[in-house]
Image (tube, rainbow, N blue to C red; front, side, top):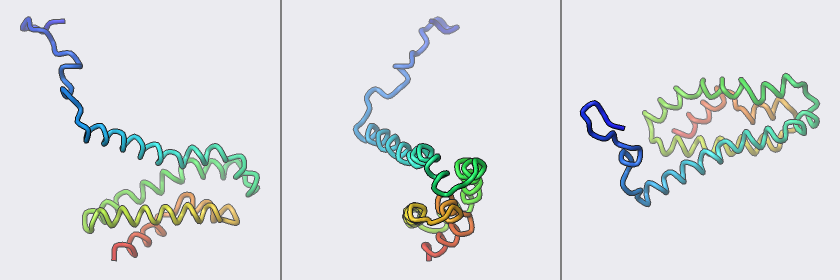
Length: 138
């Protein structure tokens, strides 16, 4: 294929990097593994939905709320305040606090004796997460 000036158009191979560096490859691998681990929470929970529903004796609507809109609303409510915390304070410390909070909530959801506590631990409410973040940043 030629352009209007008569020269050959660059192919996809010509526009990319000539050689991938080891650092670039490790970055792509790390980001892929991180995305996989992050999404494994939803996948594992989806696999065990029927067991969760039977053990807590809850309706389909409650299961739908657990998997659906509740998580999106919490994430949306937390995005801007947590970004402000990351701008004001050390991003590393905010990230470490969020990882610790996420780990604590996963343990709480594993040990939850009833569905309301399981729901709060699986999708923490915005106010509890913000209070946790404020405590960690001090």
